[in-house]
Image (cartoon, rainbow, N blue to C red; front, side, top):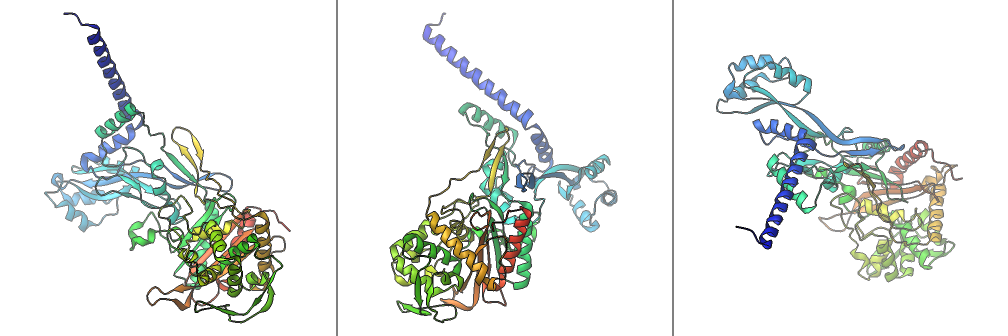
Length: 574
């Protein structure tokens, strides 16, 4: 019987499909046996005894030192588990005697596990070095064996712990993935398909076949290189810990950023934790990053933005004056300078130099509610920054939208608006980079497994202030440092430093209003003033023993500034 042309055509189509399927199957098997062979061999060894034990692969995270050298921040380490099968043991006591030559074991614990006759698996030790594990294996003790394991390790300990984050194993799927920080944000890059402990060769075979048939791949697998400079990060954390030891705040944190690019050189908050020892953390909230996830009323560091708004709209000029009455009342609310005293007719400079609330409120109202709100929203205070860290909080800026004079007035000096530290840092960077809103980021580049390398370059945002305005405000902030801040005590002869402090009452969320004796202190500065290499932001919540930020944060800022100038050999600007 002969086939007609249509039958021949169908036969050929079937043969082609079979050939394609076979080729895809061969490619998938090749990937398993050659590319991922070691991983699956280790997994097979582990699963023979206890399938849920972790043998996984994952990309690395790196810091970048000032010379461009990569420094390991998160990587993998391998070792062995020593286990026993109680049902196969002959003499439990002799097992203990033999193993105690190599391991620090509790005899009571070992004997208790060894006598569980119905049990087939008891773990005796984990993360055992290979040499020790091989020595134990060579003893050939019936019922005792070793299994390879891998785990995530953070060589720097608690360095940048909140930013690096953590990995965790899913209780159901047994796969390992990022839970916090960069580990979570870049999980799709760091993850390795099929390396979670629940994935087996047959699942990988199916995934490989599916990828071949539908054109998908694992081309995004790679390592993450960050902008964090490890020496600067350690120094920032040292200063934060010392400051915390002196003033005993509930919380303290800092950010060092390149205000022109958005690259974060160092970033930390205290208290922190060691991601290598998460068992010691009693409250999971400790893993959250307050620099990203919490919002605060920041106080007078908002005044430079208010001044910039007044100058940019033309409502005021640098040489303008106003009548400072010491207090003003709006909608039944009394607004006062920190000391309640009037200054009379004074220039704009004094609003920043003396940190006058009435002055900030006066020029904000002169700008007008609509324009003032528009500028503050354009600074990004009501938006997320887009930083490459999870769970970023959105600023609470409803007071900018009520249309009431009193809310505009209080916002002008940093009260009634709650902003995250990273958002405040971004907004203040507008004054240091020529008037642009940037995207802060920790990712510097992705180095893919196939050899490609792609930089992380967020787009520069829109211009929100003129160059003239930022230059004028910068000059005013330099004058704050040279003449007003601690009466000019931290003025540097060869460097112009632009800076401002902030002291804000802390809201009482139980009784309403504000605590009369609890403050949030903040401080920001950038340098060299008209061509800044860095902007430093510091804050602490409820420090004890001082009312104003100038007393608690000026010295830490000064130390960080001098360190950065020396470490990076920054040329002087005067």
